[in-house]
Image 1 (tube, rainbow, N blue to C red):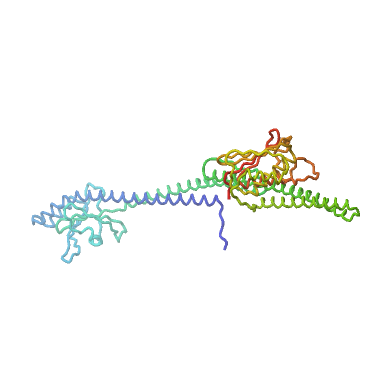
Image 2: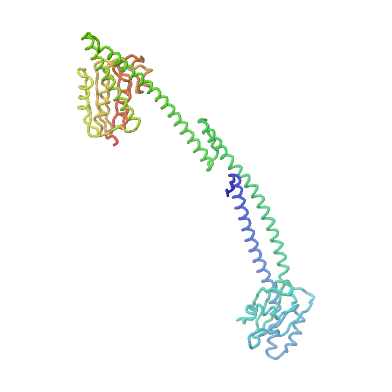
Length: 481
């Protein structure tokens, strides 16, 4: 069987109503109990006061009875003249209660509370004799107990005072007190119902205030799922709902940025595929055309075709290698093997390999030893030297400057520099110094690979113009492993 589901407003309303009702009920019951205890205590105190006045008069008469100066009959007569209702008890040798005498007299004055007349005095006292027929150390130590009259169903307060072997007892009716307490309980019930009704209204209002921002966030989430990445939720206040709205806005911003990055990467990928296809098509077309001339009868033509075929094959091999290197960077699987490297010696070797016979001035200051991958640093320097020789003019200078945390390599040429429109995109893939698509020695990936190699070391590669193009490589003293 499927369990019923409830909305947030219903749950919040039910929770507030439950808490309000429970708290009100507990407070009402506690107040009723405390009020009842106070009222009973007050009634007992008043009854003891009334009884004490009578008992103070009766125990002197009991002394006279004990001294044989009065008979019990004479004592009862005197007490009947002074007391509204009383009974005199003693105990038999077997310990059971015995009613000695009693009196019921309508007096002209009525003490409060009023002692009441009961029929079965002995039975009522017997039901609580273990509490009221107990010998006390002092004559004026009064004993009390509450019992129920089985004939009338009334609750009665039994008050007794002890004098040697006798106990004077009075009965007080608790019915008026019970009526007053019942009335008070009804009032408390009405008050509790009123508080509960107010609690329901407050719960509905609170649930509405809580549900409104939650619905706003839910609506914004649906819009975000539908592609409205600019959607945001207004943040009001400093409570948890404001935190929810703020967290949603942060999430929406990150999702928007991630989607934009994905779109940019998709555009880059599409451009990358188009550029790869173009750059592969050029040498392949040349190779196909050259192959067709290998059957020529002229030896010079065959020789020239063989030379072109070798050139285009090497160009194609370099392009494939560069593409593989770029793919390794994109996949995060580039091989990185750092070790101590002396940069001046590495630069000299890069000059001999990349630009042999070109005049390059090398200067160094400070500590020029770094912990880096020598193959990748060699690739960076070689690409920058080849770029300076191919697009700039001599003289070319390489300066190495060591500082406490980083080592900087600057490669400068004396050419016209980089055009302003190329500076922001110079390190993008397949970007060449000329905007044409004519065949060139480079693949347009050299500077992109150089920058990725700098980044994998935790460094950077930047360019600016200063009487020629100046490329600056910054490498940390110790590269991340």
